[in-house]
Image (cartoon, rainbow, N blue to C red; front, side):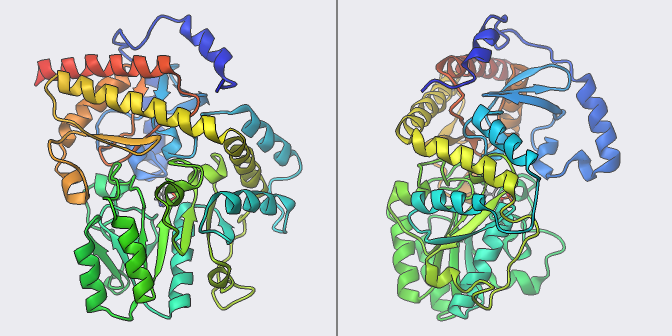
Amino acid sequence: MDHPNTESRRADSLLPNLYLEPMARNLERSLALQKRAEALLPGGVDSPVRAFRAVGGEPPFVVRGAGAYLWDADGNRYLDYFGSWGPMVLGHAFPAVVEAIQQAAAKSASFGASTPAEGDLAELVVEAVPSIDKLRFVSSGTEATMSAIRVARAFTGRKYIIKFEGCYHGHSDGLLVKAGSGVATFGIPGSAGVPEEIAHYTLALPYNDIASVEAAFEAHRGEIACIILEPVVGNMGCVLPAGGYLETLRAITLREGALLIFDEVMTGFRVAHGGAQQRYGIVPDMTALGKIIGGGLPCGAFGGRAEIMNLLAPLGPVYQAGTLSGNPLAMAAGMATLQHLRQHKTEVYARLEALSAMVADGITAAAHEAGLPVVTNRVGAMFTWFFTEAPVTDFASAAASDTALFARFHHAMMEAGIWLPPSQFEAAFLSTAHTEADISATIEAARNAFAAIEVNA
Ligand SMILES: *Cc1c(COP(=O)(O)O)cnc(C)c1O
């Protein structure tokens, strides 16, 4: 599929190949901006992992993106492998998305009244995601999972929830128990400020371990409202569900009268058009979405069967609301993104699969050539290189990774103009804007990085 940003890439390819020569990046302006930000924002950031604490070094301040590339305040160019942590599946400043946002903005940024756009986007989501008959839009993934759990508790009349260690479901109190993502990156078990009484109702179990789920239902029979999980985990790095794992969770929840909630904030419209539930053929009771469905604007959604969703006010007793929920700009960006994905479904997901395999396998081979231990987990355009020897199947095996080695790799790649997620415990993403030439350059840069790491080891 030809990406509309091909022209700008052609221009880029006339530039000297920045990947092969050390760039000796100048980060002067980013450093000054970081200094100012640190005086105003805790850690200089609005979301902790942006501060690069896990990998060291200075976080570049981004001023522009186009296709697969980012530019920082000092004019350095980077090939982007974190895609705003998931949303930018079509690359940056995708023309149809930009146009949709501009047109919506010209008609006012918000009304606080119903708009046709909400129904338009809802139709596209319901058509694509097998488990969703009805949904409600919110403004973040955090709100989506938090509200889904409230509904699940109301539907079942039960208090306990099961989550899995290393899965991240946003930063609401009851879900910050053994959460992945930034919580894993900073090596803290939960968060200060979450009362024990709230954490008490969250049972955190190891991922891919059915015995512990059975034991929890044994210990709390009739008290567990739901199991919530990332059907493919992205937030302890990429970890796949073992064969039969999702099927068994589906069977257990049906047997126990608990709801199964798939948190597809990351995997929705990424690992397949219909998300992990389509890819693995398991239909949960409820699904949380975010990231891609907002096309880069703040947006989330949660949905499920009508009998469950009809518990929400104004139909039912579960209160949930939002001043900016279903915001017209977010709906417009989401529409442009989902329309493109729907229209080019076959090519988009085949291309993401093929190019992701190429970069994931290419870098694995380069690491092995250099004698470095790397385990690669990948599902579609979502993957992680773990610097460890043993298979990574849960949080304990992910946490066994050599994070110091990852940090050196990350730093060397940044110097080469390739921006990987700044933590061993965050998945990398590809967009449709990445090309084979980008992938080859990335593998070449990794080869050089591994050689340098070896020499310095
Ligand atoms: C990103 C993420 C969230 C939180 O979404 P926010 O929009 O950051 O609140 C929840 N669940 C998963 C699986 C995520 O990847």
